[in-house]
Image (tube, rainbow over all chains, first blue to last red; front, side, top):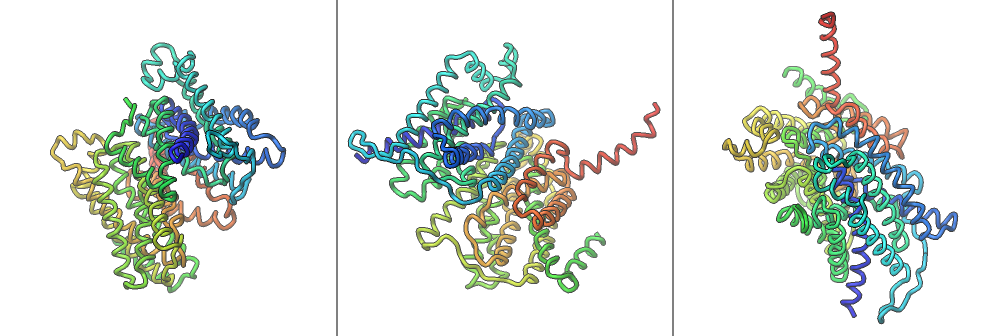
Length: 287
Length: 303
């Protein structure tokens, strides 16, 4: 029973983590931007869903369809206006990676400030499908189940997109070998923009799901970003599929730790993260 | 050199002829300059991006928070520095082989991890989230910070002009080649990292006496990891004047903007950072250099 609870909790957390990480991995793997402001888009997705639900009564599930298409062009434009220029100014790839990370820090501050102005600093929560459902003898809140199913569904769609479609293959090619991808005719600038946009969109979707289960505030961004970083390093920087798997693994570990000593959850993840960097920086599936 | 002595002397007399507000402002400027110069002494020439400054500052703050009542202030300040140095040594030893963006992430993980760990420790062992801290007068803080600032600048100059400085720049250009040349790259990195973090620790130890209460959110805020980076880049990462100028200008700007727009400073901060990268990546010093070069090109333009 306990094991089942842990597994289910792990799957749910893992599903969300996988979504977070997938977006982040796209942005780093293809556009080579370590987007420290990734979590802020999660936060925006979450808070927007809250507002839409509370003021307009829009079903959070519907918000999924709203948030995604809104955040995608924002991400695309951010890449075009900001990171593209930095790429031109930076001398080498390493410098670009460093600079773009710092620029994304600036973005973090800007977005968080705007959110604070718009939503104020207190925690916000709403009740959505909070009734429990009986499943294999466990009582699970329906919203968690729905979030889990949706996270898994989005994850599978994304996986299929990457593996089976031409665009997906182009993205994978761009993340594996940028010059080679260009040589076979892939428009790499377009890839950067698309992947950045997908990244912010996925973050927003994760945020929508998170808002159905937990209270949210303008400050939830950075911890989620760090989780995304940890997952991506665990799965292998640049390997987008690896980040999906890494997310599930980390979710499971997180679930186990939550059972034993809940307030140590993040610390354990950090320790794992640093160990990973020390022992095997290319991650489980990295090149 | 003479100018420097005059500057220090006049600053030392500041509490006597300046109103309290300016004294605290100067203390703030000193604090951010120490952070920036300490950070840049290691990260400037090597090109590493360390986001661990918050960890060192917080360590110093917590040393005072924990032992401030039992131990006299000067000793506590030194202990704060020692704590930060030890932390830097440990972290440095662990991360010797980690480079580039991984190092940045590692240092960020260190800062955030330490924050959460101490938070957990406090919650579980002490049953509380924050601590009351001993207080010190603005004057005490001012003089301590002045001393720390002077020491930091001296340390930085000493490192930069020594063979360590040369080694650091060599590491920044091509670490492997430097290693092959026989330079003990590990030792250089570790010693510089530990030496510069010492002053960050001392700063934390004395700064915390300004607030009467501290918790992990305040002490280990990611803001303190980020600020030295931005200030150094803003002023110009290449030379020490840039770092000092950057922190000076930036702190004054922040203080000027904070009062009329207390709810916007993060926004302004973020915008400034992005502007630095988009428009003047070589910082203020770079702008000045470019401006001066422009004046000289004109006479030859008729060719």
